[in-house]
Length: 155
Image (cartoon, one colour):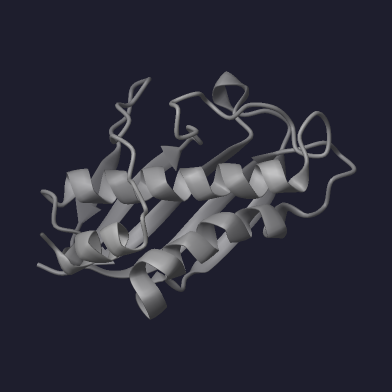
C-alpha cells in the first residue's frame, strides 16, 4: 500500500471508482513527466451526479462539496493511470475549475477551493497548485462543477 493510500485511510477518505469516459476522449494522457487528466464531474458518495447551477437552485456550500467530489475523482483517475501507485504523484501542477453558475454568482474561486483544499489534504505541499476558476452557463449532464488537472509524476 502506497504512503498516499495509507494517508487516505488514516484521513477516512474513500476514492470513488475512476469514471469511464462518456464520449470520444481518454481519461488521462501522460506526456513526459506530466499527466493530463480530462475534466471530471462530481459524483456524490452514493454515486448520484451533483447537478444544478450555483447561485440558482444550488448554493455555495453545494458547489464546494461538488468541487471536493471532483477532486476525489481526479485522484481516482491518477491512481488508475499510474497503475495504482499514488506515490508517483510529485506535484499537482494546475487545476481548471468550471462552475455552472448564474450570471450574478461571482464566488467561483470559493467553489474551486473545495478541490484545491482536498488536493492539499491528500498530497500536502505537493498538492499546492496553480488554478483557474471560471463560470460557465451549463456543463455536461447539468453537472454543477467540472475540474481537470495537470499532474507532475515520478518515473
